[in-house]
Length: 98
Image (cartoon, rainbow, N blue to C red; front, side, top):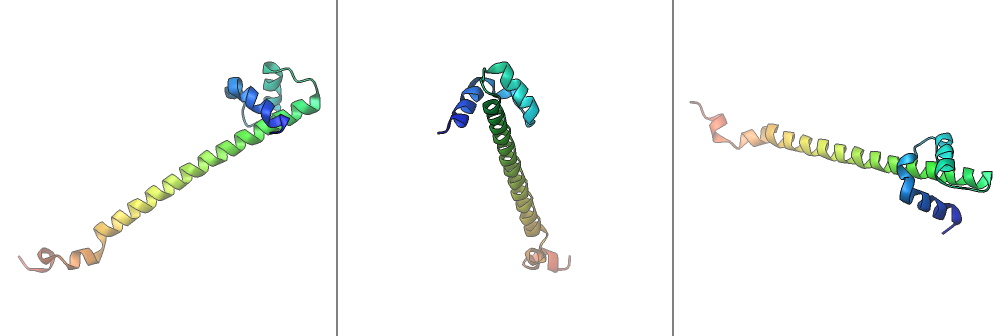
């Protein structure tokens, strides 16, 4: 595992809530919670944090979209079963006069 990922995991273990989707804010938050000697390393870690959080958010949104689409598809299939003319054709009550 490379050092950027390792440092990110160490920082996330205690301070994940302090980071967001903005690189500049993540750089400031990283300065506040960790001592990073070089500016280049600090930027790499902040960039990796930003990419990781954006990827997590996209995955969550995709799961929500899939769940909503599955629920909509299920509702549509139930509606088809209830409202389908074929379902009424087999019923004697609907076709016989009173």
